[in-house]
Image (cartoon, rainbow, N blue to C red; front, top):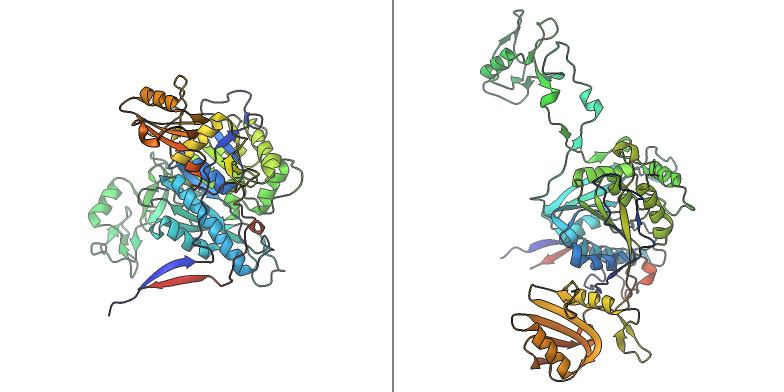
Amino acid sequence: MTPRKQKLELTWIGKEHRPKLEPRILLEDPARSHVAAEQVSANDLFDNRLIFGDNLLALKALEAEFTGQVKCIYIDPPYNTGSAFEHYDDGIEHSLWLSLMRDRLELLRRLLREDGSIWISIDDNELYYMKIMLDEVFGRENFVATVIWQKVYTSKNTARHFSAMHDYLVVIAKSKEIWSLNELPRQEKQNDAYRNPDNDSRGPWKATPLHARNYYSQGSYTVVSPTGQEFKPPPGRYWVMSKDSFTELDRDQRIWWGRDNSGTPNRKTFLSEVKQGVTPSTIWFHDEVGHNAEAKNEINALAFEGDVFVTPKPERLIQRVLQLATNPGDLVLDSFAGSGTTGAVAHKMGRRWIMVELGEHCHTHIIPRLKKVIDGQDPGGITEATGWKGGGGFRYFKLAPSLLMQDRWGQWVISKEYNPAMLAEALCKLEGFRYEPSDSIFWMQGRSTETDYLYCTTQTLSVEQLQQLNDEVGDGRTLLVLCCAFRGKADRWPNLTVKKIPKAVLHKCEWGHDDYSLKVENLPRAAKKKRVSLFEEED
């Protein structure tokens, strides 16, 4: 009898539904972009991006240009505590949250470099479901760690059961085999144990015991101090090296016998020879990386009106993430920008960044905050620790409207908001071409290879016009022609592939869908209620 194979799989209502996302183009608004008045250093970064719009559509918009380019993703998604989703009962809201997160995680994975990682802030409400979903999207073998962050430093006696004092950071590598984690810099307190009581020319050192519990066949000998005192390992313990190795260390004055040369021997471990970095732990205390109150103080210090952020993250927390996961010049992405902390910290640390935010606080909070950072007018957060003086800049983009719209008769037509350049760029994304318009050849608007091009127009093309295009393209090159209508048969011209728009792209996407946000009230109710199952058995 063949044993049944058990597969761990997260299932929920609506999991099978996957939106057919339209790859929107991004429209830059120079009036909302900002650069420093002068160059502060040679390392100033200007091509950072702030994108206003639905973050799922924004991630799809970034896919063509940034697939495999992002070194670190940090996201702080809604925790699905129940309070944010008052329109649905717990089972339904949970399923919707899972679907919405799954769709975003799949896109985020594609944007990551092979040696990149994603860091997700989460709490107990969805931690375990999130972990299993990440196993499905990224592969269980790429899980790195779950970090505990102490978000508050005082307990609440009013709590019904336990006073919650921590959140989590789930760390996933795109490919754990090639991903590496930076070390943390040594702190002064870690060097305090190093002294130099004997004025050794090799500098400060600390005494390290020479015996251990682990059995060592050559570790049971007797040693003699310079004053003639004999020492054996304590009962049940062994010297950690052979007698020859001990003698060699003693000859090199690397054995400390105490100030009077008659004490128990210890090895001198020199500060100059120890690893200068520190391996991070999975518990991050508030005194190391900040807490919620510190984060609120950072936001309040920027003098914004109103308080739209209940639990912002402190700059020191994001600094720790970027210290471990990136190096200067690397690209960082946050698709749940919130108050803009990730971009502010990345900017001060010399990392390139992309942030996405849909809420109006993108304009009322994030842009003013980033302007202060760039202009050197943000004294808080990690400014002093990084020596930040200002500089660089960012570009503001918004999502273009949907390419297709329905006319008064319900027919799909090209949106009137699209000019010829926007249309060409949008069709390049839809057809898998790079938008690279030529300055001299009108029909070279997009390129997929060195010999394959795209041209689009809203005109009706005649047989003569298509023949002229075919002749100009010539042998050895091909051209995809997208037009509203054309005369003749599509296969008449060997160098051309001719398609009608919008018919050619009509079934590629969900058109006119502008909101895939985590505002659950915008989503349809499930037809049938049932609970989530964690396990599914397969024959």
